[in-house]
Length: 123
Image (cartoon, rainbow, N blue to C red):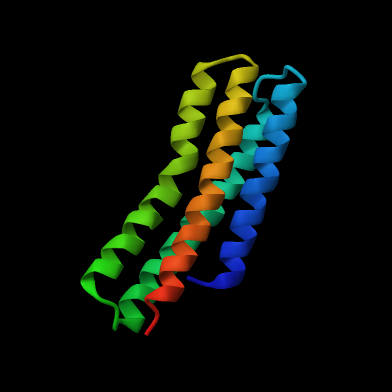
């Protein structure tokens, strides 16, 4: 995984989660701007996951267990926001913003953990 992309993704996810949390505190449901930002973060997550898979194939040298763990985390990175969005947009109140904030924090933690496993199993 490319470290700068992972940092951008993690910081963007945390910033977005903070914005969603502030929206929830202001008693605001998720807005169109929240959705557009979610889409942008998801695109970055997809690009990061694709690059990581390509690097896994090209670099090689990792054990099967490490590859399976990294791929599992990458799948979780890609699906965390869509699942959160599906749950949030079913709830048209401030609690939808809370769900989005939780999804953003979850994404940041998943990116951090993916980077830790990536570095620990590096060849």
